[in-house]
Amino acid sequence: MTLGIAHAGLPPVIARFHYGDTSIQGEGSFQVRRGRSITSRLVGLAVGLPRDGRDVPLTLRVERDGGREVWDRSFDGHSVRAPFHIGRHEATESFGVLDLRHEVLVDRGVLRLRLRSARIRIGPIGATLPKCLAPRVKSQTWVCTGESSMHACVVVFLPVGGLLLAYRGSITEVM
Image 1 (tube, rainbow, N blue to C red):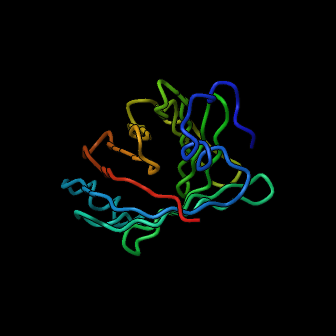
Image 2 (tube, rainbow, N blue to C red; image 1 turned 90 degrees about the horizontal axis):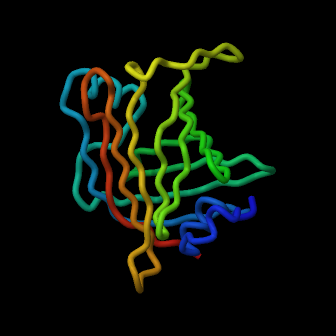
């Protein structure tokens, strides 16, 4: 996918991961925090979310093939794979039966994804969740001046149960 005019201000490493034409890999270290409520623990267990930890090793693989893209985030061996597509103004990501649509915002080199809607899908049949039942997702990616690594911070809240997952750290592209 060619980088659109709306994203011309992104640092090159963010552009390669989010808008590149070829597969890419990065490695880094993250702080991971899981929610403590019973609901959060059950959902986290069901979808295989990583455990709490400091300096948790992360391998990020963005696999691109014929217009399809899959993001594989492996936190110390706990892999979370999700089909992902990002355009000029919108990104979609799928976790099992849950499809998330995000608004793409770029401001001063920072890429932010703001959740617009969540949809439950079983085969070709699906339904958009009311906002009161949808997760809340905050995501931002940036590069500090003089650095080649990108930094990311993602926080996911459930409407019932509170915090599901939060992670923050840096990723260095592996050539």
